[in-house]
Image (cartoon, rainbow, N blue to C red; front, top):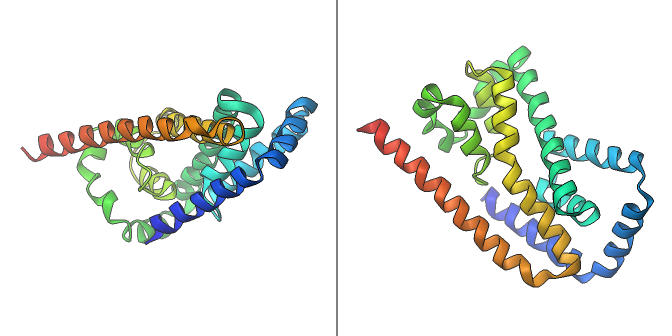
Length: 210
C-alpha cells in the first residue's frame, strides 16, 4: 500500500510542477543566476535531512534540485545529500540503535531474501539494493549497519548505487520545466535498467539455491 501512496505523491507533485512550471522556472532561474553558495548549501542540507527523515518522497526534493541546478550538478547534489543521510543513519544504528533497527527490519519482508547474498557479497548487495525503488532506503541503511560491512564500503556502494536514480530525479525535474516530452522516454530507459538489475538479482538467488 505504501508504494502506491508514494507513486500518487510523485504524480501529484509532477502535475503541480508542470502546471506552475513558468513560476517554478522563474524561481529556479533566479536561484541559478544568483550563484549563491549559501542557498545551494541550504538545499543540500535540507535534502540530506529529508533523506534521513522521509516525510516526503526524496524524488520530489531531487526533482526540484534538478530543476534548479540541472541534471549533472543537481544529480550530484542529490547523490551527496542522500548518501550523507544514509551515512548518518548507518552510524547511528551501529553505535546505539541496533535493537530498534532489528525490530524495524523484521517488518520488511523483501530484505529477508537478501540475507545469503549480503553475507557473501555485502558491498554488491547494497549497491544493487539502492537501485530498487521498492526497498526502503532506511531499511537498507539499517540492514547494512547490522551486518559486518565496513563503513567506507557501505558509503561507496551507497553512492554508486544511488547515482543513476538521483540523475533520473534531477533530469525529470529539469525536463518538467523545459521539455516534458523527453520524460517518458527517460523513465522507460530507467525501467529497463531496473529490470536488468532485478534479473541479475534473481539469477544470483537461483545460483545460491543451486
